[in-house]
Structures are given as structure tokens and as C-alpha cells.
Length: 173
Image 1 (cartoon, rainbow, N blue to C red):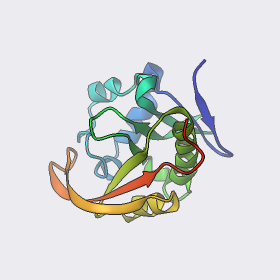
Image 2: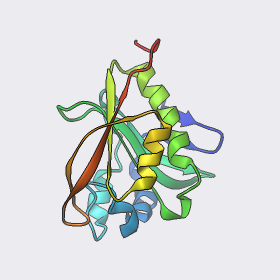
Image 3: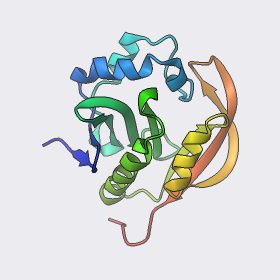
Image 4: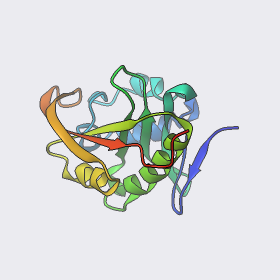
């Protein structure tokens, strides 16, 4: 059975190949992908297709976020690199400012704390992305040492604010 995270307004599940059109619509907006590290610009359908597959469940949870049956964003909490689990998200511009990132991230964080023995989850936001910083603040992340991060869409390195969220008490598996 596929994991589904459901909130009052949203639903998230693991990515599937059938998500290609919805994923590609989200990443076809430069203003969206310019705030991510790995998405190319211009949007590359073949690259998007590689991201429309279920992530191995042992690495965390990632996939599309739906509102009323439409993909409005993409979110994940994954531990696929040596530096530990990280929260990432992007939402279609038409859905900015509606609290979707905070709402779905709360459900996703509750899920991964219950499922994985992670001590801390990291997140980052480019210095010129104050909206994402506000989301991380609402979720309880605290800021740590900043760094420089590569942005594929912008073709360069940019100041990156880094955050961590320690495991809340009483949720260790």
C-alpha cells in the first residue's frame, strides 16, 4: 500500500511515472527552480522524468503534493547523501503564499520522525528566498552556519542559509 500523507487541504504520496506532466509544469517556471540546487534551466523533460520514480522507502519520503487533485508542489525528506536527511520543497508560483509548504511539511516531518531513526533534519534556502526561510522558521528549524550553494538553474554559486531541526522529544523509534 502506498503511503499517503493527508492534511486538511493537501495530499502527498511517493512520486510515480504518471506524475511527469504535473512535475514538469512546476519545474517549467524559472522563478520556482531558481530557488533549488539541482533542477536545470531551461526545464528538461528527460531530467524531470528521472525524478518521477518512487524513492527507496529506506531513504525517506518524497513526491508530489496535491490540492484538489492537481500537483501544486514537490516535497521530500530524504537521507540519500552522507551528510544526513534533508527537507526540500518547491511549489508552483500560483500556490505561493497559501501556507501549503508549511502545512505539508508538518505532516511530512511527523511521518519521518515516526518512521526513521534520524537525530536531525537539515534544510537550506538561498539568501534571496525569504519565503522559504519563513517556512523553516514556522517549522521550528534553527539557523546554523551559512555556506555557499550551487544553483544549477542560475548557473552559479550563491549564499545559502542552513538550518537544522533536531528530533522532538518522545518520537524516537
